[in-house]
Length: 311
Image (cartoon, rainbow, N blue to C red; front, side, top):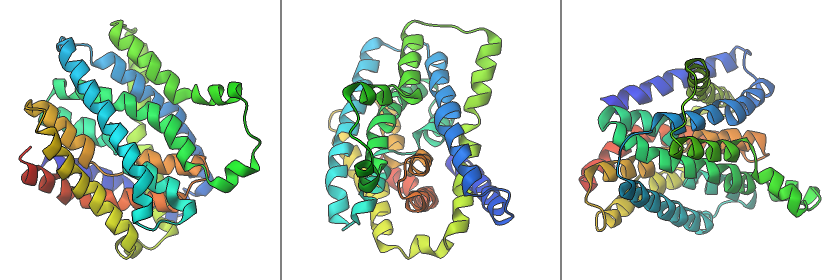
């Protein structure tokens, strides 16, 4: 029921974005500017908020263990992303979009609220470790993968200093700051905490409005007639989570950690992938359809994965 309510809330925002797009209130220029706000302001605030809100007494050994699982999980996903586009015979210009869609799931404003409501604060803290890695990867690997080859060729090869400056973007800097605040037990004045919370709360609605507007640029039935995208959705939402959880159960017995891993693996494509596609010349329409299709299907697939694996 909690998952269904969360999905319904997201769908309502998508529908609002769709009708705003149909009415001409939201267009490509507007949504590109909104995407910039999401990537560089709202999501940054959400990262910093995670560093402030999860300062409790969970044993350090457990945190290190979960951190190791998160690193291993993302390493495997990055490795699989190198081969999956070939198996699906993806066009060269769309390889980056499929790679980012495979690796990055909607853990920020779907996974965390779901775990907070069903498991509690311990799960949220564990999820924050995944969120830190998510943001570091999406602002580095995600941007690099999303850039189209022809765009990269048109640009001069950047110097080492220029590459380092690009690495230190808003997302990575905020991740480092959040980690420092967490381990340093930092505390902010109430007004600053309120500002961060308000900005962080913009992430989900603004992202979903942008995705909804993108629905005006393709026919909804295309979501279910794109065989390649459907095959990808089946792999991402069912095959990988089921296999991954059965492997994890060989090494992990803690039900809270397993529940966190379930949500990390089985949630749909992160809407941030569509934001990055729009900002960095990826296939924005494909990324938006991937977000939409996997979000719709996840209503059924997440409970199914839980039933199959017993997590």
